Amino acid sequence: QVQLVESGGGLVQAGRSLRLSCTASATIFGSDVVGWYRQAPGKQRELVATITGGGSTIYADSVKGRFTLSRDNAKNTVYLQMSSLKPEDTAVYYCNAKFRRFIAPEYWGQGTQVTVSS
Image (cartoon, rainbow, N blue to C red; front, side, top):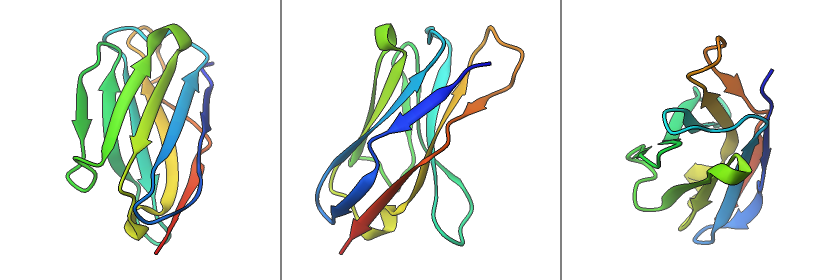
């Protein structure tokens, strides 16, 4: 079974930056997809951004221009660089991965809390 380990969450003031990391126990190939989701209290989980092993990215409108995804395939790691943070970015952030070669449809990390104070 693939394990996803998240790190980097914390408490920051609005306007500051934070970088989240997601490290997988399996190699991320070009066609594999890693995504970041978030869930705020009382709200449904939403997609923040996705990146393929080849580097193609998609961002939600709410974070476009502020958040940036990158990856280091050699380290099996995906990074979410969050800048110009807003209080509405406060949520638990989850890493999700889909591997083309595995039967399991997807894997999830445990989540990391991001709190942005005004």
